[in-house]
Image: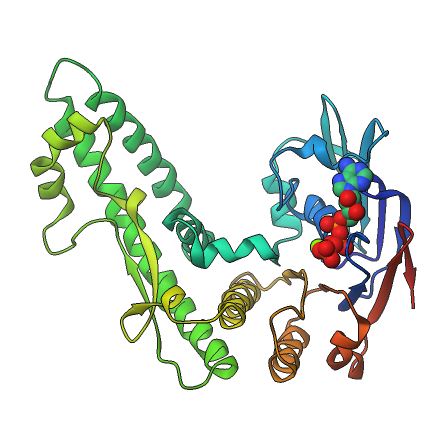
Amino acid sequence: MAFSLIKMEGFRNFSKVSWNPHEHMNIIVGDNGSGKSSVLEALGFLCRGKSFRTSHTASVIAHGMQDFVVFGQSSEHRIGIRRNSDSFDIKIDSENVTALSRLAVLSPVQIVHPADMELLLGSPAERRSYVDWGAFYHNSDFFYHWSSFRRALKQRNAYLKMPVKSDMLDVIDAEFVEHSEKLNQYRQHFTEDISDTVVAIVSDFLPGYDFEFQLYPGWDIRKGLLQLLKSSAERDRMQGFTCYGPQRADLRILINRQPVQDILSRGQLKLLLCAMRLAQSTFYEKKCRKDCLFFLDDFASELDQDKREKLADYLFSLSGQVFITAIDEKETKFFQKSPCSVFELKDNLINQR
Ligand SMILES: Nc1ncnc2c1ncn2[C@@H]1O[C@H](COP(=O)(O)OP(=O)(O)OP(=O)(O)O)[C@@H](O)[C@H]1O
Ligand SMILES: [Mg+2]
């Protein structure tokens, strides 16, 4: 899906703007504080129904306004989001919608923004959600096993806190192990699948580094999960939670067996992050035979000319609609050799060049 019209009202520094994006490549330029990230945040609401920056949705309502409205139109759909201090309404083609997943299905998106670096530097939960996103599309059974596993984990942790022991733990453990093993299998399949693509892209950006992607399942596979649950039951009871299982999985990204974050510079980490998001987009396009939108905030920062040019070429190779932001239009010169639209943000307005 590609947006052909976007309207934003009462959204951060925009009181009322309307613009017509290019069907493929869009470059948004403006000074610090002009609203570049806010434009991507508004687009993110249309694709995910939430902000990629804050969980306090009401804080994006422009100061002095009662609500914000974001509206997006493509050749197939019309999406509207309205948020005021106590209600949040989503409409798709005039139908009221409550499930955010409806938006995600219509317009899947990959978003690279400064805080997205948490995928590499943050907790394993960030990388688990990267893997689970793909495993969901990789295997139609994934969601069933993922939700059954979550339920078994919740039951087990609740049981561990009970003062009286019973054979119930054996029943819960059997369920826990069945879904954990499936979940791990699906995560492994996706990791093997995507890592080849990520390595191909990142090796183009950063030749000479030997990248390796390993999925740590959350337990020692050689020992067997059931055995580990039994031997750690007393410790789990004392701690009140389960210490082995897919809830502890991590995607380990290594260079010469060392974590990438200990080796790569900031700019190099940004390129790895872009490679991981580009690979997700390509994977989605291949698997689901549908386009994926791609947002990249602050395209040029931390990248030299050669890397900017390479990254621009990869962004052009995507079939979905792309939005990038930059402070200076000169930073985006590599985009201007192919069809694209440039929008300048000034005085809280959006003007097409
Ligand atoms: N609720 C709000 N109401 C009005 N203005 C707001 C609100 N929240 C933030 N702003 C302002 O919106 C402006 C745009 O912020 P934004 O982060 O989008 O800028 P930017 O162009 O991405 O800047 P940078 O280049 O520094 O990343 C800022 O000046 C900010 O102070
Ligand atoms: Mg910004």
